[in-house]
Length: 219
Ligand code: DX5
Ligand code: ZN
Image (cartoon, rainbow, N blue to C red):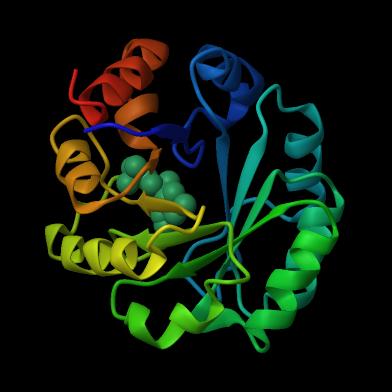
């Protein structure tokens, strides 16, 4: 299948005591670094706080794709844009004012992205497509790495692709993406792929990023 493919490794399950080394392994071959922010409220897990995330964003050799899995996300999303995230993703389920938050993210220089949990239908959110640079369809329940890819989400990915039409909006999937699942997500219409454990549990993370890209491109 023709078209652009982006691979965005997630450092959620990377070795956090050697984060810079982990990031350096995939920097030359990846498009963006996917940073999962969790607050133990919107999801039952806790990751980096804002200061720690800011340090990662500042020090990253790759542009950072901040995926905010936090409650009451509207204000903090703008702060993640302000500190230089290349892209800020907010969950529709956690936003009080989706349109305004997406606009503020963009006004602060980041790409604006809207994410949906597996149980949230896309048809309710197509009205925001004029404000978004990316849509993220979760292929696991957000919260943890290493979960099984939900193949039943491919209907929603295909529906989203259709709703995007000719607009320049990236379509991302996140959760359980591996050499076994990336082709089916690509066939359904995804072009931007988060991969956490597939990359960082590999003995050669850079080679895995290249292999995922090749598989998505049908090579
Ligand atoms: C899960 C996170 C994912 C996670 C993916 O809620 O949003 O980005 O790191 O990990 P894998 O690729 O292992 O499913
Ligand atoms: Zn994520």
